[in-house]
Image (cartoon, rainbow, N blue to C red):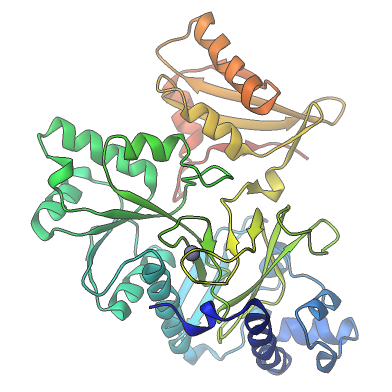
Length: 429
Ligand SMILES: [Zn+2]
């Protein structure tokens, strides 16, 4: 199930997206208070926006805009809203997203073609190991997508390895939908309870929330730890509530495929201009076909590289590499530009590191400093040297590293109300 447009030529995909843009702009002008104000205030004549290049004439929308003017983005009356979702906002208050009936259909389509991209078919049964409630979009999207694809789904939810294994052995799912580090917990449980991993019937895992690959698409340490113990295929997906859209790997696993019928993706520099092909920039998206809260040139805050060459799977859509980092978490350290995920990968190489948190702050001359707090039974100088050497080898710089109690670090990592562990504490500005 590859949508025809994804196999079309690059020129045809562009023309297709430009036609979709011609539907979006009048819709925004008619229904979105925020974009009406933007077009009027900036003297933007939407008739003049014809090509994807013309998008550069429209100012970008930031996460702060979305938070400050949340209600102004809503394009439908309240009685058309079916589902309410929230995301954590950068300024503190959560941002609300509202989905109409049509948006839920779009979400189901998005997830169905994403699953199909990873090789999932209507014959498969998937076990959902993420939250489906708590005003969270992803779990619901997975459920709707599997239903649309005609597959089966077991909604176990997050955590509880015992219940997960009970379901795997009882219902024989072929794919798991999971945060990859949780697979390590499942492996551990299986090993200590005489469960044969290779006879589980699980073929693969659709992974969210954590990266599986290095920038060259080889498996990172986390993914290697999983696949060396359990012979399953791991698929990366990248999605967000704001996008209402997922970028999912195909069987060749060379980045998440762009679905041109659902979203326009630009990769921009600090001046909101496109970066040259193959360079890292901020993913900026324009949603297509969204009725409740469509977004135009929304800067996601995620730094990525787009790969434009055609994929072996037959799709001609661009692919996004693993997220290099959050733009806000970019660190200038001793002349090097760093993002926390690169440091996380290095720390994951050490089994003796039980948990950690990365703190970023300004020193007294206003430049960036990094302090990594680690919990380990091994607090020897030799171990500390090993870690520092590994940092020097991989990143050319060594941050400050300290050993702390596990309890103390866990308290920082799991503040109440957080849906996932916090690995990076940014104390700058
Ligand atoms: Zn492909």
